[in-house]
Length: 104
Image (cartoon, rainbow, N blue to C red; front, side, top):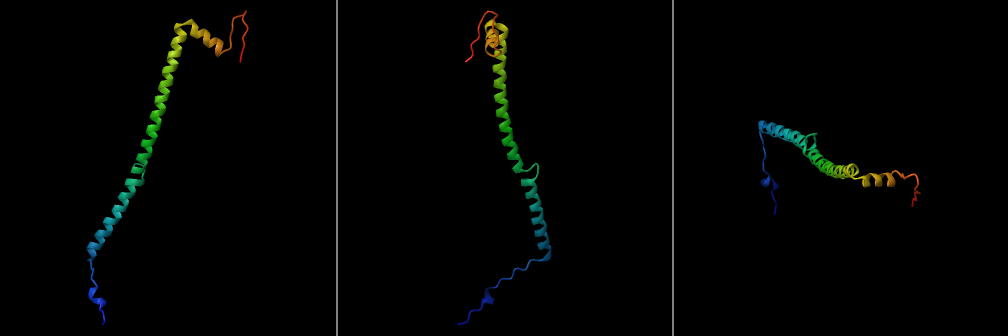
């Protein structure tokens, strides 16, 4: 029994114009994909910038909280003599002339 493999051979002849069109579409597709993913305004850089934005927003929130704490501390110094005296004694190691200062 002899098999004829030529019988199953399919002929895929594509005319020249269609080949050129497909090649052009493929090349433009590659350029588009490159510009969509890998350029400065591409998708990958978008996600990197989005991550940086959330990190910077967290830093801003922390700094705003610190500003609020510092403003309340300044208000305490301005309103109450006790806050000013505490700062002078604790942070600047100041004392009255007849007092002895003990540090630990």
